[in-house]
Image (cartoon, rainbow, N blue to C red; front, side, top):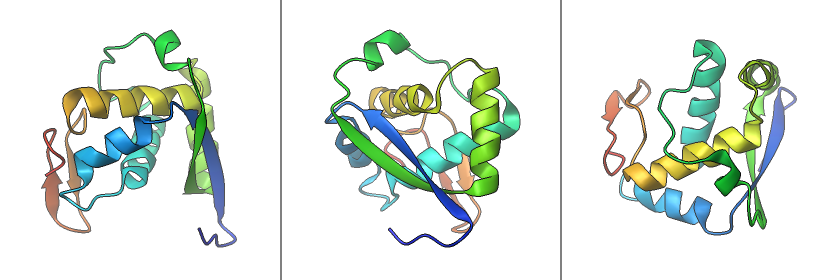
Length: 128
């Protein structure tokens, strides 16, 4: 993972199979789960709210955290993300675990997103 001088890393502890299960949802669209997570983090930091209602108790997602996932994000975005999640009284790691859980449960993004770069709408089901 190459970093430029403006990038920083966020490391999140997750359950072992969570990343793989979530990535399977996006395999057909060739859409990396790390891109979805970065978008989610930035969206929450700008909107100040979660873009979905979570269907899981966060305590359940804080068990068996046996692996890590690393995301590259700009320094400015990281500062905004950390501040926003502090106001929401949830850690970035907990928020990412909730997001991954919702992707797996919904078999797609738990909210709608239009990818302007590809001019393509990413739907809630099957990531396409």
